[in-house]
Image 1 (tube, rainbow, N blue to C red):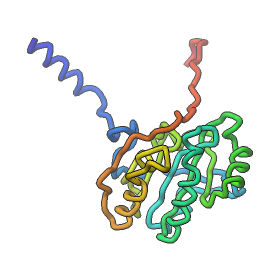
Image 2 (image 1 turned 60 degrees about the vertical axis):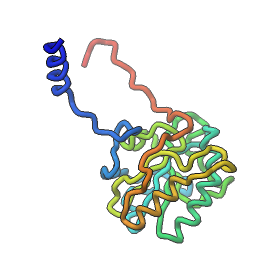
Image 3 (image 1 turned 30 degrees about the vertical axis):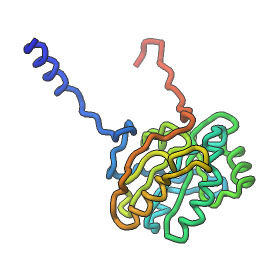
Image 4 (image 1 turned 90 degrees about the vertical axis):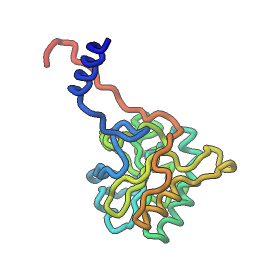
Length: 207
């Protein structure tokens, strides 16, 4: 038995170590946030990661049109963004789903209908969601002044706005403004799975 355990341990040491948070498969707290180049937005402009460099805190929210959970959070995001601007905090929403109801034309209609007061970007490559390790809509990331990730997960503790008791996003932003880590740095994001396209295998046998 001892020999078997030694072999298992030796084999595990040969495996690459996982670099991830408690719930995020890619990022850990205090990791540098992934950057993106200019992405098209619903207001007709394009926004890159560095366009938000003058803000003390940057909040990135992965969302979409088609998920009922994401729709339920739209009014909360509008309210949050309005108050955040007063504190030099920016919110940017990103959608990577490629079904018709989530494409840019539909995003523009949704943004106009709901009066979005924040950039709502579309990444058809889906790469930025992969780099953030985002898996659900909505899913929030709070980046401090140095653009390190200080919070990942849900906006608050209930998908029902009338039952919210803990506002994780607001607490994380307040801590980041003071140069601190929030008491709660990761939570489980509750929502719809982001529809990442699967890469088809080449069955021809060629590499």
